[in-house]
Image 1: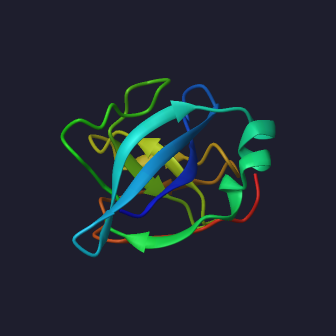
Image 2: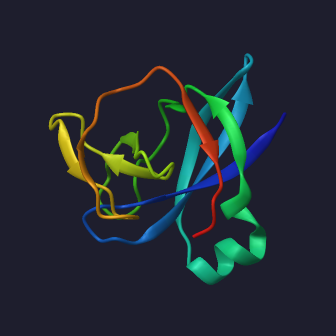
Length: 114
């Protein structure tokens, strides 16, 4: 079984968290989420993860460890953040860009530092 960790931020708290992703049936799915410091994430090399897939959550996925958000969005800056799909607009906690977000079928994650 292949597994990896990719990073996201919570737009409510602006805090960093890791999402454990696992390859299942030729797709990457989210299986766990956990709080992590920038220092620990850099030490583990999580900021350089490169994966592509649906990143759908499994039923047991706990969501964002700060706000419980189950959905993720990807900003044009390339970074991921939790998002509640009931709203279409959000502000990226990484770069501050406000945009409209929609559920996507596939996400390409390419770590670009923290």
